[in-house]
Each structure stands twice: as C-alpha cells, then as structure tokens.
Length: 370
Figure 1 (tube, rainbow, N blue to C red):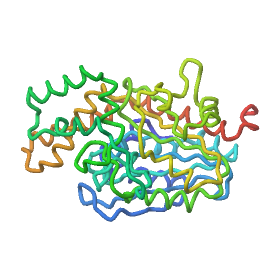
Figure 2: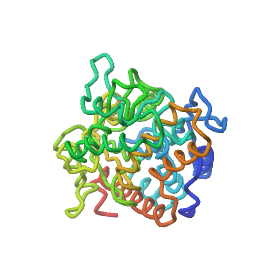
Figure 3: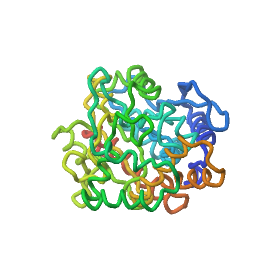
Figure 4: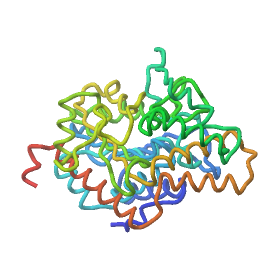
C-alpha cells in the first residue's frame, strides 16, 4: 500500500515515474505511446497503458486520467494508488474483471499545466466526424472577444460587458455557451479542433488493440473543475440511452445521489459536443458499454472559467511579465487541483468506491457472493 499523499505528484514527469514504478512493482507490462513533442522541462511525453488481468477477459474496466491535461494531477494519483492497492487488485481478479489503466491521455497538457492538447484543442470536444460540418456555437461567438481581451487582467469595461451578458442570459447559459465546445475560434476556449488530435488517434489505437476481447465494458474517466470542492459527481458518459443510464445508476447511483446526466440537465456540466467516449461505439462495437466521468470539484465555476481565460490569454501573449505568467499558471493549477491532504483523501475514497462498484456491475452474478 502507498500513502494517499505519496500517490499524487506536483509535475507530470514525477507522476509518470510513479505510474511506471507502480506498474513495475505490480508486475504489469506498459505500452508507451510516445508523444512527438517534449514536455515543459524537456522530458519525454507519453500515453502509458497497462493491463492488469487477462488480455482476453470479456469484462473490462478502463480507468483514464488527464483527458484535460492539468486535471491529470488528480487522475494520476488515483491510478498510482490503485496500482499499490492489493485489496482492489484482488477484488478485480477474483471477479474476472481486467483493468486497463490509461495514464495521461493528454500528456502535453499535463506537463505544461494546460487543459488543452498541443494542438490547442479540448480533447473531450475533439471526437467528432470532421467530414461533417461542425456544430456552430453562436453564443460562444458572441462572447469570444470578451473572453480573450487584449490585456490581462481584464479592464473594468470588459468585466462589465461579461456581467451584462450574464445578467441578460443567465449564469447557466454563460457556462453552457463557454464550455459546450466550439469549432470556429482556434485560439478560443473549449475549441474542438479541425481534425483529430494526436491523443484522439492514439486512444483509438489503444481501444482497437487492447479492448477487442471485451463484451462488457466499463469506463471511469477522471476529471476535475466542476462542483463543490472534493465532491465527486458521477456524470453519465454514454449515448442518450435509457438502458445504459439504468445500468449506470444501478452500479454507481443512490436514491440520494443518482448518476447525473447532461441530457436531462441534472449534471453540473452543460450539454457538450465531440465527447471522447463516443470512440467506444466506433472502435468497440462488440461491447456493451457503461461509463461515467468522475468529476471532482475544486473552486467555483466562475473562477475556473477565469483561470482558463487567463491561460488562453497567456498562450497568445508569451511576452507577458514573468510574475504575471507565474500567477496565471498558479491559478490554473488551483482551478483543477486542491493541494491538501483532505482533498486528496476525498478523491481516493470516492474513486475507490466507484471502481469497486464497477467491478460488481460488470459481474452481477458474482456480486452478491462477495
């Protein structure tokens, strides 16, 4: 067993080292899909993949981190802890469930402390058929110039204009407009891209090469940045399918805290486009799929949006003073990672519960004997 604090890391390179060491100590082989670019400190970047269990297992749980780069501080900690958790590993093995760990879906963003990929894309808006015309986010278009002003911090006039938009349309509409995903402004927030990113292509390769034996497939994708601090919201991450939603609630929901959904407005997340889990239906059609995003709260959503605005501004203005750049990077980390033992403890306990529940869900005939 590893201590909760030991499982988490302040930098990508350290997180990757802990993941690889955890795999080695667990006797797991790692397939490293090396990114074409180097990290912030010149380190190698990779999407590292390890399978714990039978490669031909028909029941498989995927556990992924760092879809949104900087959020990997949280997700990596969960994965590293799990690799050292003998009770968890025995639970999965005893019920015939293989576990596929995908560490750092977006290693470039993780290393650089950004949410986007090296292409400037939100990976979880990039899974779209680019042969088709992309959806138009008219509300974002209204806000784009205000979100990324010429100077930072924004002027009082800029803040007043955004406040006016929110007063007119509502805070929920503002969150939806900004976060839904947009495909027109390449330098903008939540840009879905013009083509599949490296991470998109690489994840699809992982699914094609390591998930084809699965007939029952679960996926827990670890995220941060929405909701009350430390609370892990379980957000339905499948097509708008009643049977799949019923399964997800049976596995992970309770009457007091059901699995939330972007389809009925119950989630803190807005309705989104180009979502990553769509790749499962295309690459693994043989499997019955049930998935959630486990979304941990950090700071209020307006602070998160503010941190993202500043990060995008800084990317456009590399000439910014060093102290301003450092402050912006610090706020980005705070928006997606709470650096306290209490928060880390909440992360591990809730993730661990969801993982145990997934194994039981994948093995309904065995669950009541455990």
